[in-house]
Amino acid sequence: SQQGEEDPQALSIQEGENATMNCSYKTSINNLQWYRQNSGRGLVHLILIRSNEREKHSGRLRVTLDTSKKSSSLLITASRAADTASYFCATDAVGDYKLSFGAGTTVTVRA
Amino acid sequence: DVKVTQSSRYLVKRTGEKVFLECVQDMDHENMFWYRQDPGLGLRLIYFSYDVKMKEKGDIPEGYSVSREKKERFSLILESASTNQTSMYLCASSFQIRGDTEAFFGQGTRLTVV
Image 1: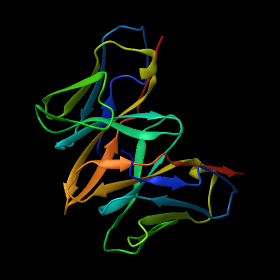
Image 2 (image 1 turned 135 degrees about the horizontal axis):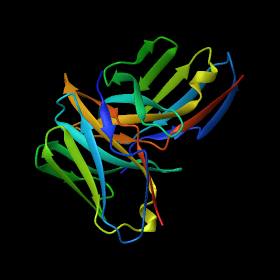
Image 3 (image 1 turned 60 degrees about the vertical axis):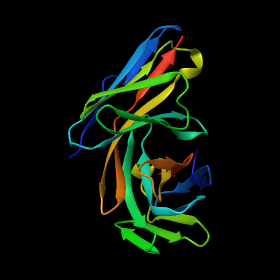
Image 4 (image 1 turned 30 degrees about the horizontal axis):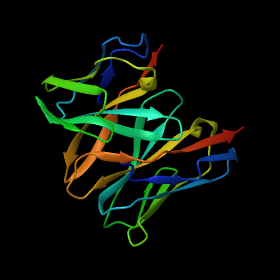
């Protein structure tokens, strides 16, 4: 069953603006990951945050995790046209070794 | 770099045909997965394998089977293709480090069943 639910489903922003998307999940996790998918392609791993971490940065990406609310957010700062893609959160549940993905957020960055 | 290669980018098959989707990874990962992706539904797990000749059903295994005879290769089989199996199929492999699983995906196979 799907674990993560992303919000919003779609987002359209101007180049240079920040993009924020959220993910909620249901069960206890080892970690939460974010992936990007360019149109018609496979997914690429972006960032992983462990259950005992609250915030993590990687370049223009900032991820937060609130295990009490079972939610995470991904912030992309100073967006570029190349950031246009779908973004998925994936949860690595306790006692499991497979990832469960949400339906994704489609981000469009307008030039 | 990890490479996960799916045998076809696009495939068109007829209803009732037996269809094989092949996936090969070059990083000696124990775990391999098959997902299907449909608009608005995200990625749904069909089958996964944590070792050679081992397989586990995912969330939507009906109408599919898998084969893993060698560690690097994981095949998805549609025994008798139907139009509702038209979808994007994604293969992934993963390893665990310090208890964390990170997945590497192939480029996807867009299957159309007519």
